[in-house]
Length: 520
Image (tube, rainbow, N blue to C red; front, side, top):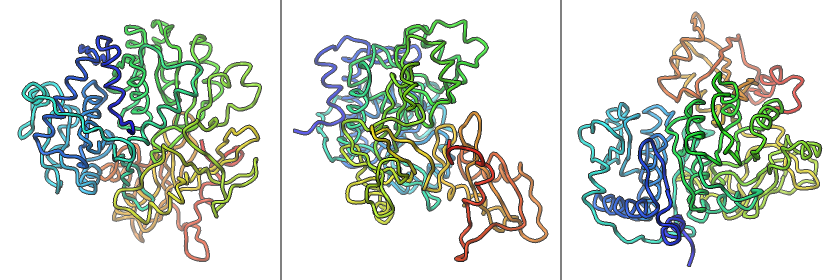
């Protein structure tokens, strides 16, 4: 019998039912209580018409209820669809319509988006309010549903059954729904746990948003260990420090910019964070100056980098804590994203998919239990990324003789800013809709804090004028704030190839001059 994503919950209630499972604000619950609530929530969702294979979306900040919603969806064999909390209403509507999503669970942070979502959604039948405070009109109440329904049997979805539909940016300008299986989501969890110098600790702080696979993977790792999950609704440096001190947090996951914000906070020295033992980070390699500060501030803590994609169910290569230590740094692996975990195969290939010699730059390709099933209703894009079972990453890299992977460039037209993936095509579509714009190109340029920033280069129509603030404000009405340009440059023309294609490498080159790599 294959194992599914609810197995960890059943095991936890079997072996340590009275251990604290979640801490969320003033709420605490044991694994016994979590198991009971998930079964009842699954019964309520079934009564609302959710069946095996349906899509159930969650638009909310981190909380104990978010974990319950994930597990209830898995319990029913539905595909859970975590919604990016930074998206605009228009982006949510697109993903819900594209995924034919039937039910939405939403908390109070995002109820202001409901009128626009409901007006344009073609498939949403039910909205469940999972927050606190006043219940919006026309919604079902989360706690009332749990209180008034009995648990239904777990359908035991597992293996290749679809567990999640995770939307990510698209090269065509529209998000793609990545179909991930139960086996796929289990893969990175097992892989990460085997790569750690020790297992996960007693108390994990979920500070990264769990709609992201990195945040969700950390949450599922702790569930698999039967530890305590502490939920930080949204990241602030002081909020993180307060919870680490209060709950004696042992493990967390952050992006490097978050680590820097914590270290830079004026009240940093006022908090006791000596309980921290492991910190996983991802999104970009850590600057050595930040690493020095982190190891000095938390000498008892190990740092571990993870690298992966939505298409690989999260991180699949890891740079282990030893290589961040003083002795480990002498081995010159710190700029790498580590080595493949035991549940994945990784190779560097040329444009024909043939593995290249060690030290030669090519494209990272990955295969194994973590790889996606494909993009929802996008066979052409699936075929372009998933080739003979191998996910082609779009990241240019080389592998050394010991299997460490060093990323040097990005082959896909993508920018990574503050840990968020931004596809240039999405931004270009928004920029081009401004009445004054004749043509445009969007590229990533270096940024000290965010790694990369979105930079728009535009050519205006004859007789038109446009300020940077005007264009950015225009984009914010169409796409999420993090995707919008942070800088705008007006030119008379864009460089074109003989075939009329914009030469983005030529546009990017001056900004990255002197850098060892073309990405951060």
